[in-house]
Length: 216
Image 1 (cartoon, rainbow, N blue to C red):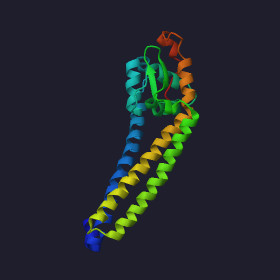
Image 2 (cartoon, rainbow, N blue to C red):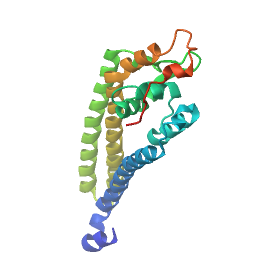
Image 3 (cartoon, rainbow, N blue to C red):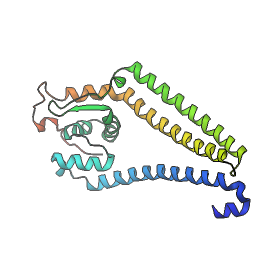
Image 4 (cartoon, one colour):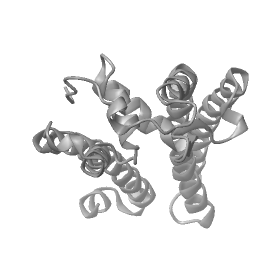
């Protein structure tokens, strides 16, 4: 930043500060994705088919990879699917939207806004509209900040507002991905999990297991 200010003077102060903020936000996002990749690598290195028979170990090692707590019988159900990794990833994204009954070992939607296709579509429309609205506000605020310049309070207010609007736009995109996953596979997973247990929810742990379970 010092080099930029030396070259352009005070006029470049605001763009330099805002660029730095955006840069750190981007680095944080890419760092998060990098940690997910590292956690997946460590998960595969830690995986042990023998130890996976222990519920506590299985839950802990999957949480290390995905960052989401999943009950052991749900993990085994996902790993019994043809696309084991994708199934676990889907469930980790859906789980915060679900209510888990530990006694019956069944799940249901946590809120009414997720339990109908129409409601989920409406929510997706709101997030997409929010993304475009916040991006437009961010661009307009950035333009206004450049017009007022770094020597005025209004310039800084518009600049900060532009960064906040950009941050909200990114949140809208991430939330839309969650709702999209819920709409595409949420009902199917709820039905699959609930059908995997007996009506009383008391069948043995071994009933959840499938022959040859592997994370790959």
